Amino acid sequence: MNTNKMKPGFSAQLKILYSTLAAGQLLFAGLAFALNKTGIWLAVPDKNLSLALTIALSIVSISGISMSYFLYRIKTTAAKQKDTLAAKLTEYRIACTLRWALLEFPAFLSIAAFLFSGDVLFFIGFGIVFLIFVAARPSPEKTALELDLSSDELQGLANPS
Image (cartoon, rainbow, N blue to C red; front, side, top):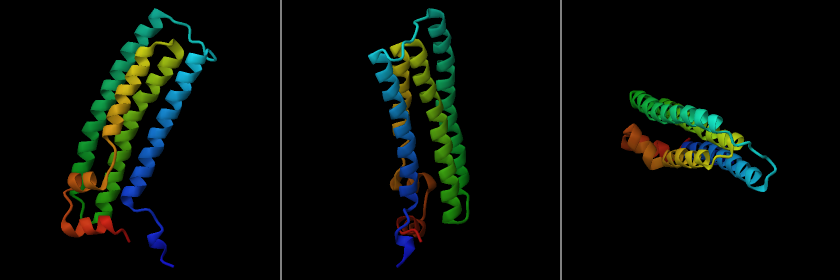
């Protein structure tokens, strides 16, 4: 039996990683929301804490989103320069992982801030960052476009060996 056909391709691997990261964020957000709304976890409203968290999370979120796109562009440009498809895909995987980590960090911090303060504004902040995370979803078409793959490389992407 050919075991290569049983292994997920590059795009499938990226989708699995992405889906796992997205599910983790959604599970944590759902748990935080449920704990807050059921009263199991009672946050003590504090205006000073909310203000400090708002300022800190604004800086972290804007920095994380900006850096995710900036570093992603640098890494995808570097990936285009690689000689082989395997090297391009390795560099692209690093670019995607870095981008997602930089988006996931402010998302988790927003959920934690919601847990500690009970302020729904932080939950809305999570939603905004999560929507940006959703926009960074991988696809074979996006991979091909962003790496400027040749027709031979496209064939290799479609049929990994």
